[in-house]
Image (cartoon, rainbow, N blue to C red):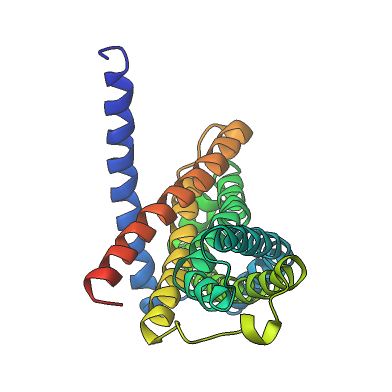
Length: 259
């Protein structure tokens, strides 16, 4: 116990320090979002890079995830109550409230988060970030804000598209495996405005979280190419941890508000 305690304490301290750094980065990002003088077209460029680069990966990933969840849902329904009339409605409610935003955000973090951290980390170790400061430009304004906005907008759009793909693949699997008619599977009776609000809140929050954590790790890079690799790994791990933590917070808040 005593041998493991120092490493645990060090890890907790690291989490606290990184959390404070991310909080300060969030404050500066929001400030420059309204008061900054970033390069024209920078946000559009990042939206194109994040959206077009992530869409094929997310479509394939969410298609398989939706098929697996639908198949397992059908198997459990067959064991408990051999009635598939409510499978589609139940699956859609779970998909909107949690599965599409939370599960979809994890693979999104591996691509978007790693890309942001690697790009900013490479700029740090090659002194490009220092060159920006020497020119009177704030790195947060020119580098972080465009990626933050692009990740929020395109991350939300991609997760919504991924949810539709997961629902479609789930419908196909339910039809082929359990003979559930698509007209029966497409059932909106359990989905309400609270579910939509909760799901949309998660998609927006996750997009911003991935960008902030990855940017913070990228800007904190040191040690050359080895440091870039470490920052990329930490960005992916940190983004996934942030998504899980925020999922707990947002879901708890939604439950408390009766959503």
